[in-house]
Length: 344
Image 1 (cartoon, rainbow, N blue to C red):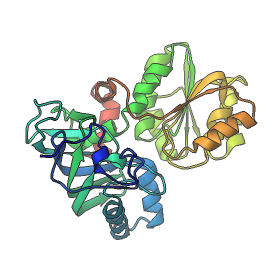
Image 2 (image 1 turned 135 degrees about the horizontal axis):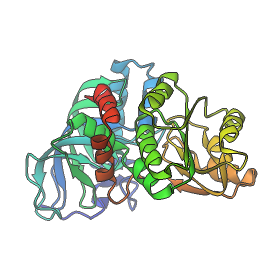
Image 3 (image 1 turned 45 degrees about the vertical axis):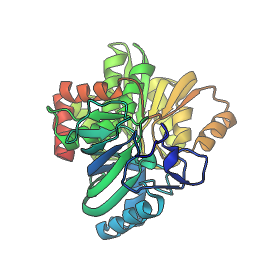
Image 4 (image 1 turned 90 degrees about the vertical axis):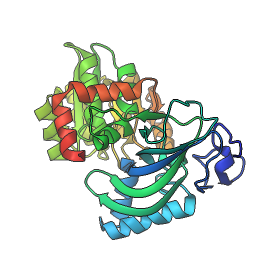
């Protein structure tokens, strides 16, 4: 058995010398190196920006979507949307454990969710069984490789697998909210009615306390009503986050001209950077969890309007993020019922 690099560089075919995530093509042969896991894959949770782009390009035709997904994986050796650059994550059953994989307590047959992006995960799909256009999940007959440095979580027994997959896919977002939001803050969550948004709303409401305020901007009236029904915000606005001045005017009517202490961007469409930046107070913070974000637009746009704000890239990993997110599902009966309806 060959020795593999900790970060998976031995799997990079093009271009040589880079890491698996930015690579154009990976070796997805499913004979493992000594420090890898081999996984029988059950379901892919394609990230929202990527799934939205694929669905739009294929007019929501599942046959065309299947063809597109298979083409991407066939060409790249991984599920990395060439338009968005993003991936998603998976759940599956461990098929083989390399002798030098760090955790030798893992056993063949254990069910895990990978907590690293599909955009860096060697993947081979034998068959797509089902594409659920309403929740971004794709059931497959497939195999995948997890590197020594790859993060994962053993699936809990008290939460349905597909619900856990959906929640863990966005676990970085509520974990960052937990870090960024302080008691008494005014927080705006753009795209608050989706999966990551709902979890962020819950954590923001927990953190701001009785003197703080949580504002949600949501494009979908149905999703906005969902937030109201669950009591996950103080104010809910239905609006298009690409309409910068409308969002600015309506949010600052609530927050005051100074703006919000923290803004969380969870949308899955492009061109919402300046809406987020303009409603943030000077020396406030914008967290761009959205993979549709253009960081060029954000950086140069903030400079152009003279906004001195901290902008944080939506790193999907934070220490303890899986436990925090699954605990939200356990603690909030409303969120659990919603996610069971959407994903189980």
